[in-house]
Image 1 (cartoon, rainbow, N blue to C red):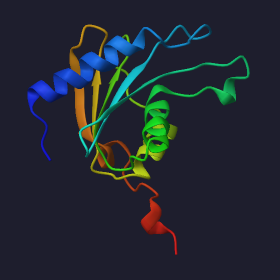
Image 2 (tube, helix red, strand yellow):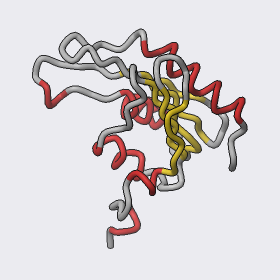
Image 3 (cartoon, rainbow, N blue to C red):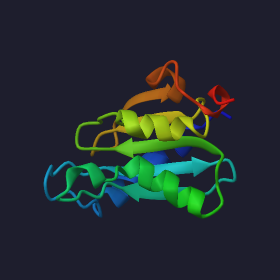
Image 4 (cartoon, one colour):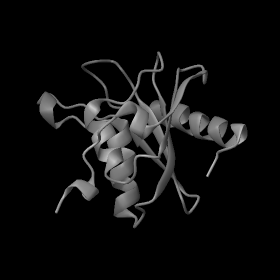
Amino acid sequence: MNLSQEQKADLVRIAKNVRKWAYAPYSKYKVGAALLTESGKVYEGVNVENAAFPVTNCAERTAVFTAVANGETKFQAIAVVTENGGAPCGSCRQVLAEFGTEILVITADEHENIVSEKKLIELLPGAFTPADLP
């Protein structure tokens, strides 16, 4: 399904608005995410840092885990808003790939300027997916 410019802008706006709740006392790099499911629901996420850095959770994964906890596993798109329009990390790309490589990944800066729109497969070519398991 193709998203309209209005739908993309709405996702970016939601991601920007939740970004203020990010817990980033160490990096100061706040991230907000808005994940659109095939059912039309949007799940929000923010990054949550931890003094033990490996247990930090990214906004994208927070949104995915919240959606899954609510019974949703089919995703259309995710908008990610950072100060400078940074792209999802490798771990987030892999978690998204679990649910489909055709998910549209929209990145935007804190002023809601869309920096990139790519299918997940473009961000993670050769993704390891459930289809790779016997």
